[in-house]
Image 1 (tube, rainbow, N blue to C red):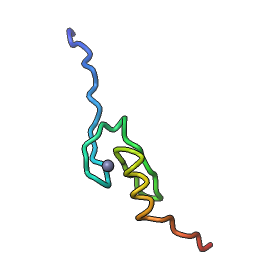
Image 2: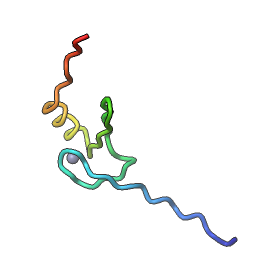
Image 3: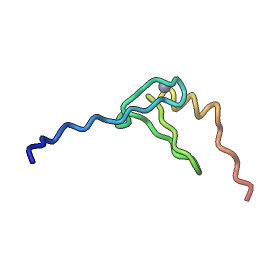
Length: 59
Ligand SMILES: [Zn+2]
């Protein structure tokens, strides 16, 4: 066994707003009920939140 441990390349994912590719490590995430969204930065996260206000809980 002479395998050297390679540095792990971070997974790249696309921002859910501007579709820019970003390393998963650096992504801002927003967790919904059944989904997890990724954003390249707070700007896109804020943009998305404005476009998708949380639904009122009618319980
Ligand atoms: Zn973005």
